Length: 334
Image (cartoon, rainbow, N blue to C red; front, side, top):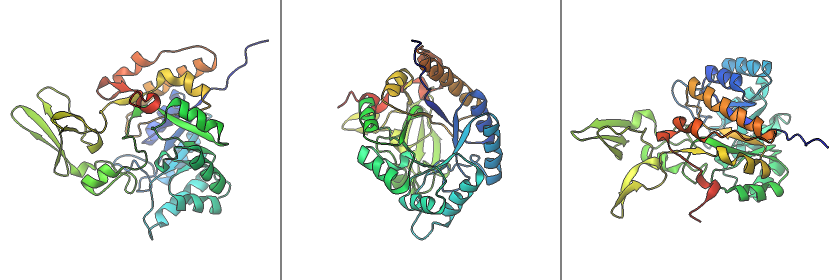
C-alpha cells in the first residue's frame, strides 16, 4: 500500500500592513491574520494595521492566491463602550474574511447571535489553557478554533486535543510574552495602557533612552528598564523583558528578550493533533516576513511528505538578539 499522505498543518502568518499581507501570501501562507487600525486590535501601533477598504482589498488578494484572512478583534471592550468593537465585528462579517479572532466574552456572544455564519476563533488573549475552558467556548459560542496560550507543553497540548472537538492553533516562532497569556498587566502597571485594553505594549510616547558616559539607559514611563554597556545593542524597553537587580543578582527577572523558535518541534506538534501553526510578528517588515514564512512553508510541506527540513540555523539571524527558546513547550523548570 502507498504511504498515507498527511495533510499539512495550516501555516498562519502575521500582517501588520497591506504590503506585509501580500508578502506573506506570496511566500506561502495558508492564512494571514491582521487587525483594524483602532483599539480593537492588540497590536494598535502607529503606522500599522488596516482600514476596512484595505482589509477588503487584502482579502481579495489572498483569495486570488488560495489563502484566507483572519481579523483579530482581540482586546477587551470597556464597560459601556462597546460600539467600536461591535461595529468592527459587523465589518468583518461583511468583508469576506475567513474568521474573526475574539477574546472578550461579550463580543463572542454578540458575534454568535448577530452573525451566526461568521466563523469564530478564540484569541490567545482569552488564555484558554485547558479542555474545560476550550469546550466552554465551543459549546456556548460555536468557536471553531482556539489559539492556545504559550504556557503549555507539547504533551499538555496533546491531552487537550483528545478532549475537545474544535481545532487548536499554537505559536511556533516570534516574540515570546510573559507566561500569563492574555493578562498583560505589567505594561498597564507602568504606563496605564496594556495590549488587553488599549492594544499597546510599552507605548512609544512612554519610551526614552538616555546616553551616559559608559552606558545607555532605557526607560519606560520614568522607570529604568535596562542599562547597556557601550557597544551592546539596546532592545525596545518592555517591562516584562527588562533587566533588573533582584536578590543581589542582575538579570532578566520575568522573561529573557529572546524569540520563541519551535521549528524542531513541528513533528511533535503534528502528532499532538495541532491544526495550525502561528507565526508572531505583525510589527515586522516585509523582508522578515518573506524569509520566515517561506522557510516554514518548506518545513511544513516536507513534514507532510515524511521529510525533514532543519530551520534552526536558517532562522537564527531573525530572532531577538539572535537567541531563541523553546519556551513552555519544554518546561525544564517543572
